Image (cartoon, rainbow, N blue to C red):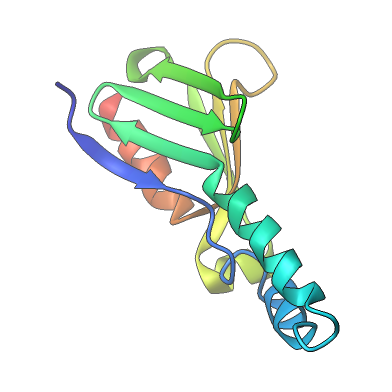
Length: 124
């Protein structure tokens, strides 16, 4: 059994604080803010990135699921992209490459992306 080293979903506030505050301000307007927050919450919970001692697992979807599983030994490189606000709030986009020019997995808005990069680098 592989040990789980990292498991997370994209955070709502840290990933996009302006939209979060705007949604809170829109709650008195016919409850539009609540609808936005519910849809946003469901979409963030529909994405999951897990790094174990042997694999990287990325799941997307609620009703229909898409799952990518990569062995750490087959990963060639990990790219982290962070905007200014993502750097301030500790989130970022993670691209995982195996073979070829396009990323095998792209996880957007994940917390502590550099920690993920280091964990994958140690395992491969």
